[in-house]
Length: 295
Image (cartoon, rainbow, N blue to C red; front, side):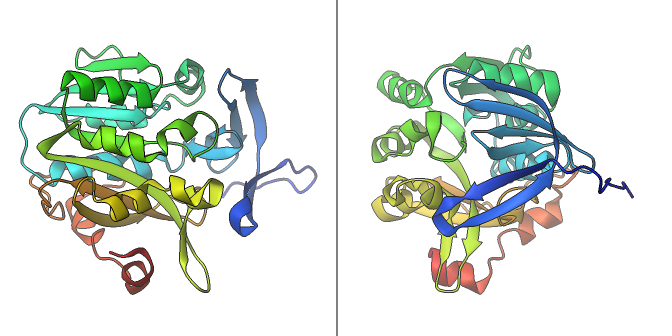
């Protein structure tokens, strides 16, 4: 067991202002910069390894990034028989989603649209969890995802899977937490495709809260927009944990045209976190989910 010295503490706090909640880690700052879009920092923790934060919010760590990345990719990709699958990653600057998507030979194209080149570069240098940007199937686009998706819609470009790997609705991500963006990505999904969204969830004494709504305007909550507007008429959910995300309870949300049931894997894969049994079990939702979140 790693022993942490009591002599010196370097407490870093992530604050969720909407419900006056904070969690803290004793970490050493390795890198800090202000890009044109956001504050990018890398910390070292004696137990959790290196931690990427954007605007003081945890994005990924060596200890648990695979929990999020594997569940975000393998459930929607292996929950349906596919050939020649095309994937769009919205955000994803640390590169972990790209890494997991490229594990599948049937994935023939992966477009990753990240607004901040420095997130990609800093993550490669300090975290090293990214997929291979030189893979011929991969296309890295540095630009605004809202613009990319709007232009993709105009040219009729569609995908089998769109993964919304977004930070909270502050800073550069705020442009995509809109109904217009939801309309655009809904038009870019194939008839048998699916959009994957996700968020941390807090359970309060009266109701459950999405982190998106706590960090920004309640009207900029993508899950609520999709549930209310039914731009893609079928909304389903599964769950996991990601230990360093606020509250640890983490939800994944599937938006589709045809309402396919993604709860049964069509192929075997065992990752560091993902396995077929966990795939199935992740769709078993607690009663409070059904009562508070409408699933």
